[in-house]
Length: 327
Image (tube, rainbow, N blue to C red; front, top):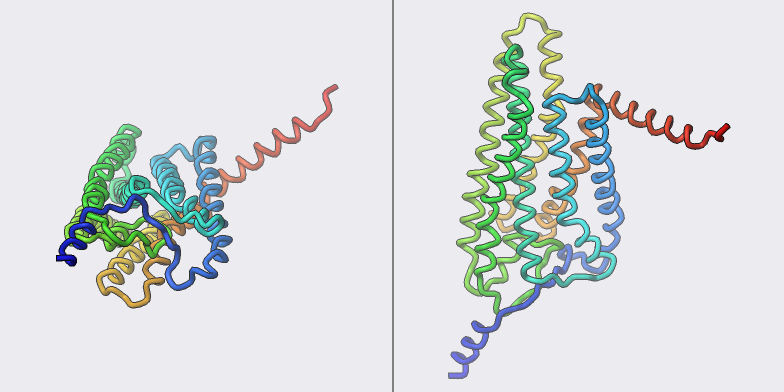
């Protein structure tokens, strides 16, 4: 009788907030990681703003490839800002409490931005495919209108695809525990606290990931197979090398992005006994790409480096003009 009453009371009780405990196993010294994470976040915001300013100000960069890079920069800043302020608040001010609506909103934003990043990588792969395999038709196919339509499509697709994940998570019954061994609201971390199981959420997340990022990756691989086949037909080794060099930055970022996604998925499925590993990988996957993307493009793209020099020279000229005494 008392047992059934206790079960009835626990089923009616609903937690009103979650507590983000931070990185599991290292709570006592996790604040020391705040400095490198803060540097990564500031470098991500600064570098992506610099790329946006450079692309807007340099007429030589008014090309589809750089338009997609500018959109990627906006997505990167959104992804980093979704998680980093809260993580730093946990490490610096012990602000571990997060309301249920805020937590579900963060789950939605993370899935949305990660999906959009994958979609922009697909758009960039399509851009390189047309540029290398159909160079004469490139100006008529990859137009500003196409870039706008592709961007709107990616925003709508990921806004809708990401919606079921937090909606299903919000419908779970959180009746006892509210401490999340994480420093951000991940779908699997949150739903592991549910008293009525998380199987529907896990299946939904897996299906949506395969439909979204899985299809993106498949089409990206297909694009590069066609690019490689076209390049191998070129008679000049120099022309082949030049064609592939325009894809190198994109390939580096794609390999890093999808490799980490696959590793995180495998670790979650394997249910590793070291919870710090998937949590740390999850955090780094959301902050390293936003800081890595602009650096890779800046180091490997001559036109972008030239654009940076023009922006810096222009700002120096304006500064010296202001400092000159008026006659």
